[in-house]
Amino acid sequence: MCKKLFLCFFALSLSACTTKVNMQLPEHLANQGVLMAEIYGIKGENVQIDGGTNSTSLFINDGHLVLPLSPGKHILNGISFTRAKGASTVTTTLHLDRSFDIAPGRITNLGLVLFASDQKDQRQFHAYWLDNTPEARRYLRARYPSISASLRDNDFLLAPGDYVPVSEIPKIRRLIGSLIASGNLAGTIEDSDSNSVVGGPGGLIGQYVIREEKIVDLKIFDTATLANVVDVSRLGDRHLIAMADGSLFLLEQGRVTSVGAPPNAGVPGKVKLLPGGMVVVDQRLAVYWSIDDGKHWQNYRAAQLTNSILMNDIVITGNKSGLAVYTKNSSQTKKILYSDADNFTFRQIPLPPETAFIRNIACRESGIFIEPEDARVSREEVIYFKAKGTDVWIPRTMPGTYCEISYTDDTGNLLKASCRMSFSRTMHSYMSKDGGEHWQGL
Image 1 (cartoon, rainbow, N blue to C red):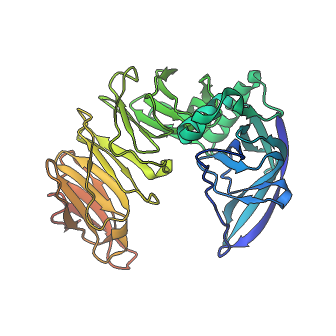
Image 2: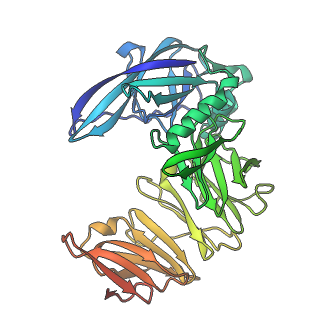
Image 3: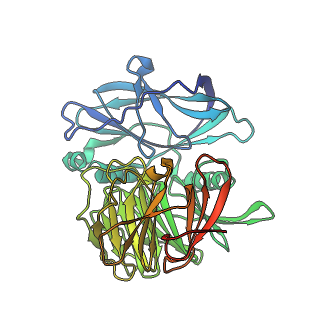
């Protein structure tokens, strides 16, 4: 159920690097099998399998390890992760020594492992193994639909192990919730005026109050799932919470209720609550919306991607003026989907010319503003504006470089910016009353 792990670590110079290989599953397993596991509490970078003879270095996508292996007996020796320490990085290895069997054409699931550092001795971690079979099946179906469709019921196997008894799961959730709320473990925290919501692994949804710098009234809800929380959206005291297995929950007035998920949706990427409804975007950029708290769903799939992208590359932004879904940063697929906020009529709109990365999008009554990330390195920084009803992007020159912009009214006329001039470290403040066409110093 729980195993105490000692740390092995060594320092690397910043110039050193670890090769990361994103292992893609074949369309059909044929003579191979697949190892699955969900990992939480560390940002795993490398897994060691079979004592280094067949040591594997790979990128663990969104906390899930999905790895094709040859049939036979194997050992998951450990998982390593890297963290910064001064001018160097420290690589830490947690030794697990978990044995398992791989059968051809079958999935072997090791379950969900939660890593929590010992509060008395930071050199030690506790590993909690949980049986997450239903959640792992749903994740496989959403992420790898072709392989999932080819599996029979007995082709998905839970490896023998010392799993946390069902009766002990509420205690584990409370432990993890308190660690996340206190900042001792990574998780999702959404603050509001009256209380804070915490989300994490093992179906963790909790609510708490901070009084005199202490966490009080920590309440953990029974979600009947062990899936990880992937996103939270707040509107007033309502919270829409998305889980990694596709399930949705609504937290309001101190109660958690299940929301009917969009049919045939993939793994959730982002969610957003609006006065007129709720929006879910999956990791293939299909958009779903409901105006009755999940009883009925509509969708826009015209811009749906063939392959999933990372959740952090998807952004939903908007207000009563409009709603934009876009991809940013490391995503190789650049798209913007836009809808008026009052009718959810999504359509794909063209990007401004020569826009490699999108830093931010702001929807206002007058139109849409785009801040390109690549413009920050130029001497003359620009933003782009597209008026409602047109598809023409108009560049507007900023008063300096490395500008941080705030849109201070609903119309999009009043903008404020803090910018540097060339390579100066001094920040200067500016204001525009015509949507960035003209600027004056403050």
